[in-house]
Amino acid sequence: MSIKENYQKIREEIPDDVTIVLAAKKRTPEEIVEVMEAGATDIGENYLQEAEEMYNALREDAKKVRWHMIGTLQKNKINKALQIFDVIQTVDSLDKAVAVNKRAERMGKIMPVYIEINIGSEMTKSGVEPVYSVIENLIKEMSTLECLSVEGLMTMGPRFGNSEESRPNFRKTKEIFERIKALGLPGVRMKTLSMGMSNAYKVAIEEGSNMVRLGTIVFGERE
Ligand SMILES: *Cc1c(COP(=O)(O)O)cnc(C)c1O
Image 1 (cartoon, rainbow, N blue to C red):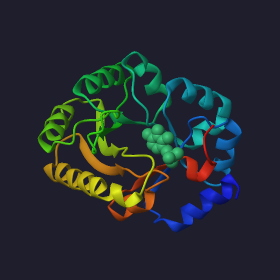
Image 2: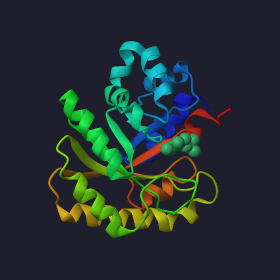
Image 3: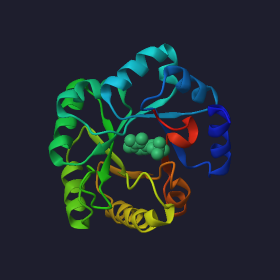
């Protein structure tokens, strides 16, 4: 099946209120144009350099979609990131939050961010440790940063393997999401729970995800 057919099939299968972010790493501008023509609304990039190249290659079309930073945010590249991205999904420390806030303030904008949780406590993954009190403290501190709009949580989990193995972690993330939401903190509007990739997006949606990030299942295997 083509990229277009893959995208449209999944779009039809999942509920309308679940956003699909297309993970664009290692893809060509032609592939991204194809998925945009199929109706894609949101593009995720892992590396600022690739994001910039893609953004420039798409020219006017780039403005037709929302851009999500889904890779590790490097502090020395925040200015550029704020110019390209509509949301940064990978804030995982107060340090980074403060840095984003400071630069957003200078640009006179309010930056939507999600907090990345390392729900499986995987050594290789970035993200806040999955201890509720740690996450709550971070969000409370972040809610005082006036140029950040905290709008969701993001989690990665294993990219391969049985999707059922991810279910308990998705469930835990959803619980944290609901607890944070119930705090009703100023500057915090918990709208988005970004979890689920090609291997487990269905299970993630069953457990409350309203944003899945898909690469392989739409574009095929990466080189
Ligand atoms: C690559 C990537 C995805 C998509 O992974 P697939 O297995 O190709 O669907 C989602 N989220 C992040 C953060 C990624 O780096």
